Image 1 (tube, one colour):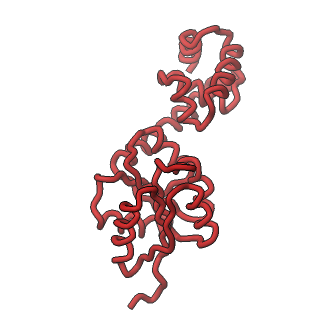
Image 2 (image 1 turned 180 degrees about the horizontal axis):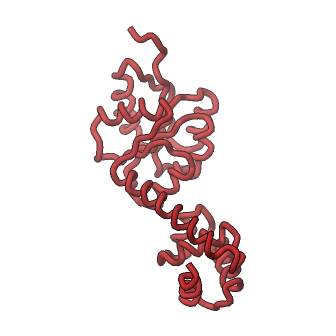
Image 3 (image 1 turned 120 degrees about the vertical axis):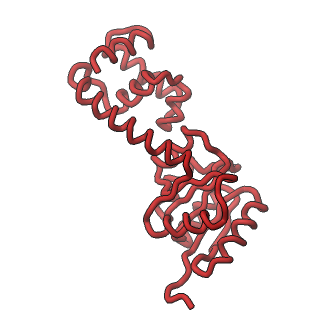
Length: 217
């Protein structure tokens, strides 16, 4: 008999078959208990606020409100383990930046790994599938690169932190749409930032901006 109450888990997925399968796996473990299910982001937020589950299993592609749009708020009430079929690097990066403690991709794990991942996340640790771990490592490298760039270019060009973020991604060859997804901005906002960057660097094109920036950094 367990000395402690089971860990409460909120299961969020728009597919009722997936929810039922997860429910069966989790409730088959004496240390875990599904406290609620949700079919979209809005339902997930309502359940998380009401129940404060230790862990939320969160899908991404859902109607009304997808996973990325609500994870920041969900993370205030529960430790979030993303469980989705999406293995896009930009999505993984966005989820991790918004507060995900773990990320698993359907088809790339067995039930024992899921149970262990839930326990690790409930304990305040992390659990990442191989592709998510690779993205996390890339995020660290990008952060270090950004810090080096900031040290060299901040005083010379006078860019804001966000303008520097946009410029770094521009140098990586990303389009405005990709930059917007990576930084969780609108394309219009990215375009405005780039206009300010071009003015400060005294250039008129993306190519000129990259050349001027890399010459300094």
